[in-house]
Image 1 (cartoon, rainbow, N blue to C red):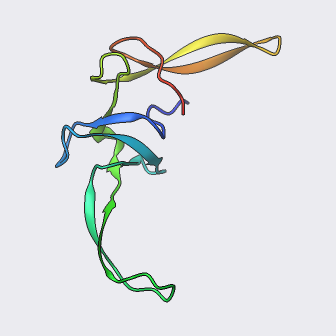
Image 2 (image 1 turned 90 degrees about the vertical axis):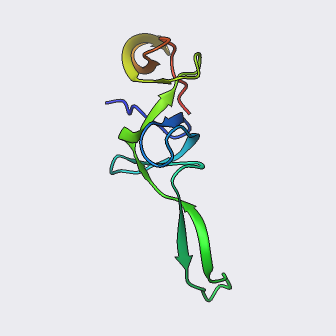
Length: 113
């Protein structure tokens, strides 16, 4: 099964307090959650450590559920759904079937990072 949203994808938030913001997916977590750059910023209280880190309040990016974001179409720059197309490619003299992610709005392939 091909993942619909991968690390490095440009996504737009469609639900929640950060609705309308765009950012790049920096991490995909195992429980259907993503960490997107510049989205879902929360304040975190940090204790001082023996390694010399200061105590205080820092801003960190919290995970957001994958159902609250949509991939941005590379051609139209609008949010789009993601489909999967099965293609046959010739590699090393053999024909292999490959699943490719495709933007539903424009039909263009989404680059895998």
